[in-house]
Image 1 (cartoon, one colour):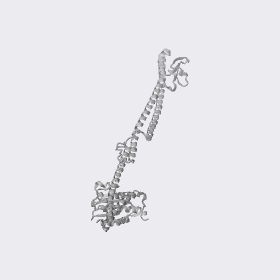
Image 2 (cartoon, rainbow, N blue to C red):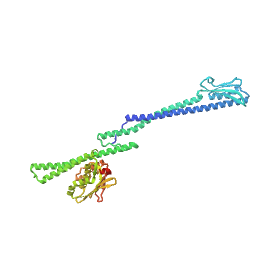
Image 3 (cartoon, rainbow, N blue to C red):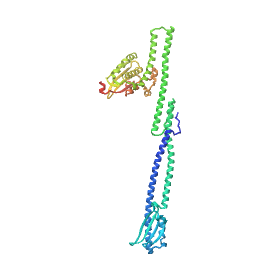
Length: 454
């Protein structure tokens, strides 16, 4: 089942969209201001250049006309009038006698206090033949320049408006792309919390961290599903296993009460065996529950693993003898910081597991040794070993391979070992022994020298 999608943005989506828009607006505002400043600067520079060129052209034309006609007349000055009109300025040309020879352009500019006024002498062969007064519009911009500036400002404003609209559309689109996977994850998480273990996000959540999060979520959901299936299978198996001894106890006690069977040693031995069988199952469940809290309840003190291993081996010695197995300990004193009771449980579970799956006449070796900064514990047997397809699951809760189902195991013992070893900051490994059987290796940090001798 695939998690559903939601089209609403939600609070997070609104914040992300607002952030996108804010960033876009700041960028556009910065771009617009810089564009206008640069445009104004460019236009002002262009206007200065045009004023200089227009002034030079007017003076040059006046010189040429004066020299060609040995003076000025209004009819001869039409080219100058054209240049003045083209520049957008106002001109007044006076002679050395102060008589006005020519006026051209918008004359009010000459009296305007905001106009840019220039006065130039017309010098020919070292002699001043006239004086020119030019008045350019405010800012030095001609009507054409003003029209150009207004056009550029309108274009910049229109571009900014279109960019804002584009930013709004893009932010909404990008926000939906970002928020939709998060909404799917939220919906999927609620579904898993409600008990739907089939929910998966798939691998199309997007690149980068979103894709990694989806993969991690699916792995978590698959693990929860697997654990739940194992738990249900374990409950069914435990119920099945308990049903047999309970039925035997019920039948035996009814036979004793009804007088069908004599109350002899054989009858009581059978009842005792069935009671022990149920007791072991209850102990396994209790051990798993206590191992869940081991990291919080460990009483960490310096512990000699050789001593703990020897005590665990002594406790199970009778069981090994009754199973026809030989237990070979090789114990080197190694001190770790840990909980002696929990470590005793690690040894007991590993030895009991080896005893359960090793045929009569076989051998189980228990080794404790130092390996650099770590302590090494090995429990190996001469049994049939664990098939490759089952080795990745031997430490899973409630997992029982084919041999475990035949022996009536609960699938708890090795899971307890892993949890207790993890609580001691160690690791447990499964290897194949030289004889072909199983070899479990536990590595624990050794105690510092000062603590080991305290």
